[in-house]
Image (cartoon, rainbow, N blue to C red; front, side, top):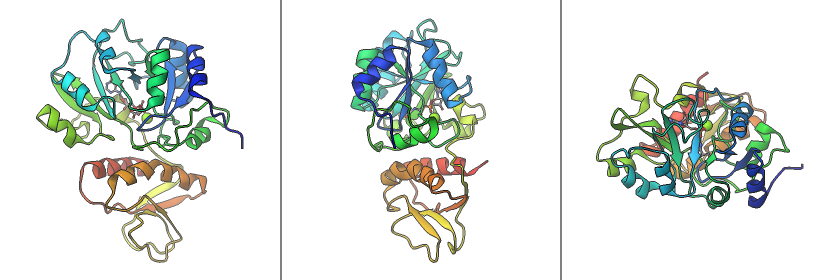
Length: 310
Ligand code: TXA
Ligand code: MG
């Protein structure tokens, strides 16, 4: 099979020509456009079939690049930046609207920023400038954590920089500063506990408040084509997504997310497994949701809940 794997140099050139390419990050793959090309940004929306009211994350080369887009620094901003950037935290806050194209921020007063720890993103942003990048999947599908996932969603000639399997496997945590307080717009790869250490309080999660802060959260998400159900009794005759340290007696097939005590390994394998069941042509799959407690497990369960709800 022929795949369009491109070098970092080719990615930079294509982005500077106003084209869209896929890049690896430490969380999930992104569909990248240069922020200087509004048409390329529009193409990102249309390629993904993404509603235009769901804003995109701006990926910066260096932390302090953020300051050119904002007029006021929210409390704890610099502490958050120095603790978690580069890394899997996205920070959304009010911006100078003239400096961030309207379609990137979906016409909101705020925009979301991240500095990725992935060397490819850093290198590309250094040459091209700010990179606008949602996850590289069709809207509603699980995010891509391998180049093959992008080819499945966007075709085999889609240009991708191959970074192998993403290190985290879950999207960044989105923290929004709104009404004078930081709130979680989307839980993700950076556990809430770590945010509490810096903020001094546990930020309220979007799930528990009424108005969605992170516009993307109201849409269907992370879903494979197969129907997913929770494994609540015997695995007999069923296709199961489970753990390598458990036995699923007389099951038809088992897809392992890893050892049940290793949440990082489970996170890394999650989308890959959800996509694998589609590739293998299963229509109905049962997930073992018996997981220990803890931050990352909660995020994994939330993704599975969303993936299994229609
Ligand atoms: O890990 C990630 O965040 C990946 C990689 C590629 O960086 N990107 C990603 O982008 O997951 P996307 O577009 O799939 O998800 C971005 C999330 C959405 O839930 C969106 O609504 C939210 O961030 N978001 C973007 N701008 C926002 C804003 N101004 N205020 C609140 N939420 C915002
Ligand atoms: Mg996404």
